[in-house]
Image (cartoon, rainbow over all chains, first blue to last red; front, side):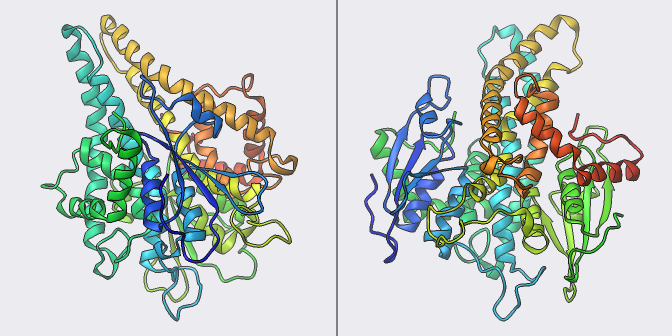
Length: 261
Length: 261
């Protein structure tokens, strides 16, 4: 249970975050802390096979995490939200417009093509995180599983060669993403320190999960991508991010791990 | 070049779709045809290694497809859009509100939790397609690559066993998705025939890519998932979908293939 004050004077819906260790759900704890919302944190642990536990299916049939349930005044039953990006968008719609860039510049009409660079980046990254960046990271997860499979030593060269082939393709794709993101941080609008400009946005919250994986197991190191790493460090130093980690460490009694493995 | 009439009376921006064979970009041709928009179709072919060609990097540094460029009246340079879901959202904002469900029911205030089931599904599926459904399909693509790798026959059992292990995990996850989608079609709002109700939405356009892959190489067969397959068939019978296929077949001189491989 995170006890923080309510957002503004608006009557707040009752929010429950179904949080699974080492999963995409951690970014939602961070978001809830950034917004200073009141919520219940329900903790789930992975099975021996590192999968989501069956109890999550009682919350949503797909049995994944994050799931956010919202019980607003006057509603018969709670609304059940899935997909990190949808949860972020939904919370920002009602409680966090300060994390959404303005779509059109001051004095410009709402016309096609006139959107700000800040807004355009924001919308792109809300999809890019899972649509473009996660697929090669998923491939890396598979290749590292192949590499560490228990096998007699004389078979190891074969599995290693398969893993090397997978990595050969996907490391190149990942390097392209890292270079691109390095240049995007360098060209952040208004000399900003975040992905979409000078202010934190929902897109930074969406991107932290693949960036964590990139840093810890896909070679996005500080010597090669200094601006990208400095950006990730800035994110991790934020009080709300730190508080999110402390909350789940207190709730689980275990050190926080950002990604599965 | 697709020559169709302009959308309504609104002055249309000049649209160019950078289309790569056997890729996510095909859904955007379908969308442009559903909306009856005028656009240029620029065709790219995969390399021998089945990767995107380097020319795509001249359009956008990530070198992926789809990319949509939009040159609106009064703009100095074209706006370059990436990520299928963002391209769909952007086109619907300006030219396709008929493919977006209403957010609140008639007579209801714009309040948290009051959103229609149609709208909620629409927003979830715009993210679910890449966020939840593509990762296990990416894993299947990798396992099928391992299975078909050229190797001496006496090593084949080893690679087969690795591929079997990957499939063992991800086939179960995929079956969960297929069962869920089967039930979602069965419970489509207002007895609808589409994912989000009685009308086609941007979410159906987003979902066709993973559904094509599910049908052709991940075991989502009609005997097991009849409603889901009937839904996919309904999509594929739409005149705009058929026209999109004919357009790219005429442009490439090759039979259309929905997915890489």
